[in-house]
Length: 157
Image 1: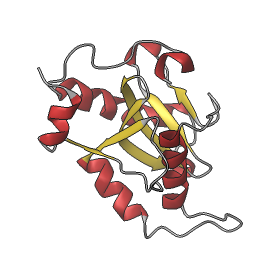
Image 2 (image 1 turned 30 degrees about the vertical axis):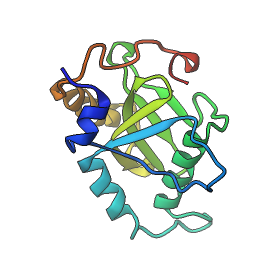
Image 3 (image 1 turned 135 degrees about the vertical axis):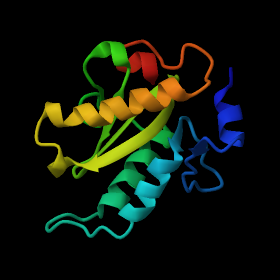
Image 4 (image 1 turned 60 degrees about the vertical axis):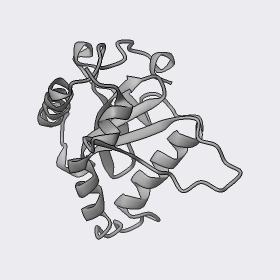
């Protein structure tokens, strides 16, 4: 079985490097799959919606920065655990975007996939993304437990 650090050195996951000032310290961590990294790169060309101040890429980047810096995040507004609780899949939310992943450790989110909020008209539309997270996590030779099993914000942050 492997650790997150071994998966990172083997290239199965990558660490999100928030652009911190020299005096800033990260309090949390975000990693992502190579597919998520490709999707995020493609998102750089997505325009901002009318009336919005940030592009979808900038929204995710800002949300990830706030997470890494340890800024307060509102459970249910900025992130939430998706049903059913037994799958331990979490969603990061911005105005325009949804990012799906899980917490393999406290204060460490691993992003697997994302989608525009407008393409997810109801909770049933989340199912393929939840399944993608579960499938990726199950395929990893990661030490057990592979996910934080708690359901509340105190369990993961």
